[in-house]
Structure formats: C-alpha cells, structure tokens
Image (cartoon, rainbow, N blue to C red; front, side, top):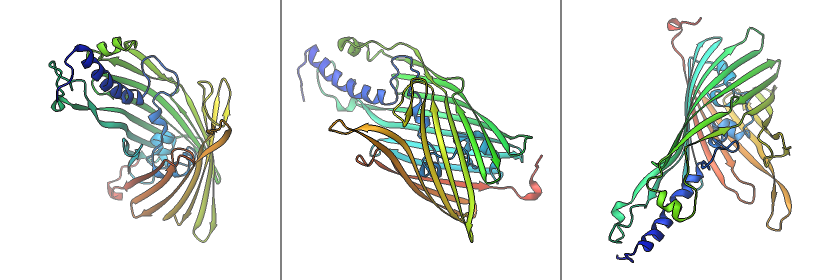
Length: 375
C-alpha cells in the first residue's frame, strides 16, 4: 500500500503512532517533571491474596513472608526456616500484569531476613515509529514492541526487641522503572515498621518512604524530538521524582470462638502527607484512608476472609456526590507446608465492577532439627 509521500503525511502517521506509545508511556507515571504525589503507586497495590481479601488490613497481624511488603517487623513471626511466596494478578482485561515473589529466612528466633520482588508492567506495546519508510510506504515488518514496567527489589531485616511483645524491622528498596528505550529511572527508599503484641491484641505501624523515596529519570528523546516539537510539547529533561512518606497504622484482635473456630478482626488507617487525596478523611496537610478486614478459620486449616477499603466520595453522572467503597472476599487453605490463598476484589466501585481474581501460593521449608544452628 502506498500513501502520500510528502513529509507532512509522514508526520501525521508518526504523530498518531507516537501518541499511542506516549499514552502507555504516561500510564506508568507522569514523569515529565518532578512529582511529590502519586509516584511509585504500583507499590501501593498490595501483595498476597490474604491481605487483599482483607482490604489491605494486615499491618498489625501479618506474620509470614509478605511482611516484607506490609510490615517488616512481622518477618520474625515466620514459623519455618524459609518462607516463600508467589502471586500473579492481571488488571485492565489482562493488559497489565502484576507479579510478586518473595523469600524470607529466619536466621534465629530473634532475627530474620527477606527479599521481595514486585513487577507491574504492560508488555508487547507496538512501536510504530518506523512504520513508514523514506518512500512513504507502510512497512509492517518494521513494527517492533517494547514494555513499560515498574520493578522493585525490597530487602528486609527484622528483629525481636528485648521489650516483651515488641518487634521491629526495616526495608531498603531499589526501584527500576522503564518505558522501552524512551525513558528509564533508578530509585531508592527506606521503610521501617514495628509490631506490639499484648494479650489477644496486636498493634502495628509501618512508615513507608520515610526519607522520601526518589526516582532519577533519564530520557532518550532522539526518536521523539521531532514529534514533540511538531506538537508543541515540551521536550522532557532528566529529572527527579519523589514519593512522599506514608504512615500505615493497624490494630487487630484475635479470639477463639468454639471448638477449633477462631476469628480475627483488624482495623487499619493509611495516612499520607502530600495534601488532599480522594479518601474518607482529608485536610490540606494530611489525608487518612481507613480500611478493615475480618478472618475466620477452622484449626488454621481453612480460612474465610472479607474486607473493605478505598472508601471515597465520587460524583455520579447527574453530578451528585455519593460514597463508594471496595468490597473484597477470599478463602485460604493450609495443608502440610503449603498455603493457597484466593481473593476476589473489586478495583472500582459497584457500578464499574472491575473485578480481579488473585491467587497466591506460600511454601514453608524447615531444615531437619539436627542440622539447625539456631542462635
């Protein structure tokens, strides 16, 4: 197929192709200038079907390898030498994929280490910048593809305090974000967390990005410069993107009910300090997002879970305000050293009904007693 061979025709086609690419590029974060809000939001999605089913309300009660994400202090509660977890979920009809893998090692009764890896990405995005050759011909064989992805490595250390019931821990985060060959960033951050147990009560606090996690972006605009100038857009320059601190608080209560049945309820609160967000409680200085979860179990073998989060005020089509909330439910099965969890979550409100199915698998590995070298 032959199209108009003049230069303006080529520019129109290139403009359309690049617009599609940039739309997906900005999907991973608006990074044309330094930000202090909604940066690294892929790290706020959550991991583990158990926690997602409970509306992200596990900062006080988390006690397995997923503690490396939710609250590093909980890593000291793992009951085996090794705790390994995997999770996969998809969003936007499978366009975006979210993957999580983690391993934790209990070095002693009072010390544990962990590594978590999280990836959120859109793959196989068509790159049509070279679709039209110098003669004005459409060359589909010149179409390539690229990925826009966010990747995080979280290194965790947790310790049992000499104060009875108190545990604490910290995370060091390394972040890698890319948009094909067009842009890339390296980022670093620090989290700290603590848990305190008193009778049937557990209290937890996790301070994320306490030093304001930053991403240092670099851009390759060689192929895009002409289109940016033609469309009147500012050519991006290397910049720094900041993620402001977030404080997550939680309190849970556990109680035996009847003949092997137990129940645990947790109430959580996420506090951000970057101005007003669309959450239930908001001021110019701080916004607070409450959430809650419930877990029922039978002899720690079968689990039933439910939770509520993302309580927001939204406007309807007739411009009226209404409260929306995200419901979540899930189940879990523990057998031998394996735990399989499932969560059914609604990433929108009831009218949108963008439901996601999330599965996570956890494996506990212990060494033979005679080979253990506990301190």
